[in-house]
Amino acid sequence: MNDLANTAHRWRVNADRATFAHRFAAKRWGSTNLWLGIPLIIVTVVTGFLSVASFYQQSPSLAGGSLLLSFVAAVLAGIQTFLRPTERAIQHWQAATRYAAAKTRNRVDRFVIATSEASA
Image: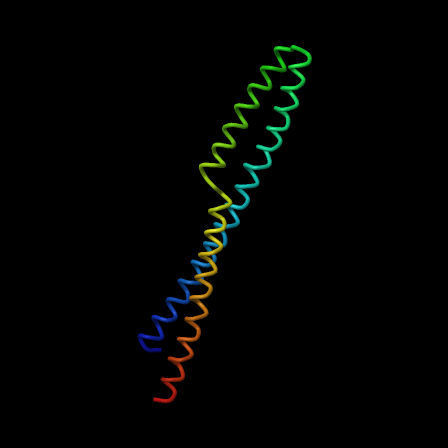
């Protein structure tokens, strides 16, 4: 293979690696969204129930539990807002798609190189 074909091959390998890495990162950020979002929903629902129960029963322990869980819910919501895992997952899927498209273009370029070498 000549230098141009070697370069095209190297670009294809790099595009394969980048596509895989971005798809892996997208899946990781998608699962991060679930790991933050589902506990946030559960904690928020339980906090609401405890708040209502402490209001009707005038129980300091229920009010304390409600206060603690509302703090946990606020922290989880803040982390989820700061990290934006859904947005990051989408960005990584888009990057993986762009690298896959570049890999396809690279295959066409290698075909053109091979046919031009054969005709020369």
